[in-house]
Each structure stands twice: as C-alpha cells, then as structure tokens.
Image (cartoon, rainbow, N blue to C red; front, side, top):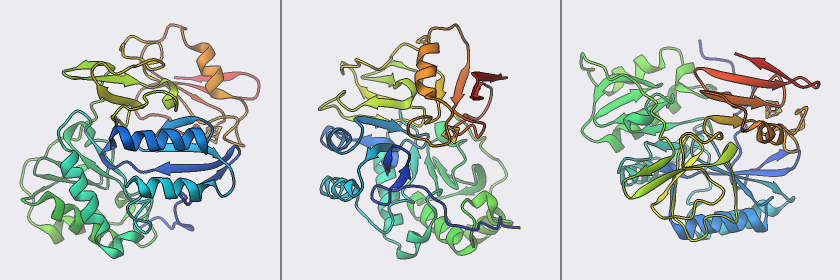
Length: 335
Ligand code: SF4
C-alpha cells in the first residue's frame, strides 16, 4: 500500500525557503551539477550579500544558501532568474537530476530537464523526485534513471531499453505522477515499478546492477576533483571558476583552479567526514556539531565518519559509517 503521507514534502526551493533557526534556507537546483563561472558567481555573490557567506553542497548535488533575512528570498529569486538558474517557478522543486560528474552528459541532462519542465502536470511532482543520469550514480535511488539505453526505476534496472531516453524519462515521470497519490517516491507506490514498466514496454532478460562510484579528490585529466570540508564552501572562494557539483560534497574544477580551502588529496583527513547542520542552523541540535567535527579532524580514522547534533542523525550516509551522535554530554560513538 502507498504510504499515507499526511502532508506535502517540505523540501525548500530557492524562493519557497525553509525557515531554519538561523534564518531562511534556500535550495538552488542545479540539474547535472554544472555551473558556468558566471552562474556560479551569481550564487556566490548571493550567499555573500544575502546569506551567511557560505554555500552548502547537498547529497543531490544542489546548492543551499542559508541565513537569509525575511524577504531576502525575493531578491535571491530575481538574481537567480536573471542568471537562468530559476527557469520555472512552477517546476522548480522537482528539478533534481544527479549526473555522473565525470561523464560527458550535461547536454542530456539539460534536455531531460527542459522536457520535464515542458509538461504542466509534472509541476505536481514532489520535491523528493529524483532522476539519475549515468552508471556512477545509478545506485543513488533515483525514481527514474538512465544508464546508456537502460531505464532504471526506483533505483533498479527495469529491464526496459529505450531509443529516446528523454521521452522515456518524461513518460515514466507522467506515470509516476498519475499513480503516486500522496507518495513522495516511486518506491513507495504499490506495484509502481511493475505498472510503469508494463506501460512502457517489454523488459529484456539481463539487468544492469545499480552502482555508486564516488569520485575521489585529485586530478582527473584536465580537471581536478576538490573536496569541500563538511560540504560547506566559503563563498569568497572560486570567483570566476566554472564548477560541477558532485553528490559527494565535492566540486569538479578545471585543472589549475585555485583550490585554497578545499582538499584534493584522497588521504586528506577531511575526506569521508560529513556532519549534519547542527547549531546554529538547527533548533534541535545539542551542539555546534560542525565545529566539534572540525576540532576532531586530524584524529586518525578510516572509512566514512558522520557527525550528528542529535539522535535524528540527519544526513547519515548509506553503507558502513562510524557515527558520532551528540548526547548533550559529549558524543556517543556508533559503529
Ligand atoms: S541530526 Fe538533529 S541536529 Fe542534526 S540537522 Fe538533524 S535534527 Fe538537526
């Protein structure tokens, strides 16, 4: 049975901000993660002029600006619109498209984004809706995914092979919207994958395995992958630099970009360490969890480590991870 969602999802948009403890929180959708230098400068300047001076990278390769004064979202929206970063007010929050960040796929992402925005009823898709493009991100649980000609549904290969990937995503999105009732994700819809698969064609026998292949910090050809400590970028950095945002709190930059404040060494102590918002942004937090995590950096560790400001453990990465959870009297370590 579909989950009985009693309320619409509360994912923030660029103008429909979330009112956090430290002010307005705006999420700027960046389908495919690619921003020209001009567009990234618009986001940087907005974070400096209107927000708290920092840009947060999300696990869906979107960007967040926080600390907005009441009403500042209108100025932010105007700036983003002028820069082409808010092309649709009606379809804004559903524009979540994660692409494999080292692949040449931004043109496909842009065509998918435009095609989804061209369908009026798809404005009703929830803010949790997610499309993935590419093998490296196919295991991130997209409602719809493309890996070459394979159509993924709810994070798994449906067995459908498609000639026109853009049309296939739009058709699957339409069907999800028709079937979903109050569900936020395709995985929550009773027999949703089976019904959409049956409506779209005949599956082949073999299946591709979903994968998650994070990009490691360091040089890659004529580019460099730069990790952003705790996913929080000082907005004064990277002026005049084109970026591609990854879903792993890092940026793909042109080789030679100034990476001050970032890390490009996979052995960096920041690599694999994440933290929730904590104080002052989250009213539930028992501590300034990012500051605590930053003080801990340098302590030898291997694998993923996640810090949380309370027992809700927001943002905990999937898979093996060591957690530090604030208790009000220090941290509990959970393995
Ligand atoms: S884990 Fe707790 S403190 Fe951290 S963001 Fe979630 S609710 Fe806030």
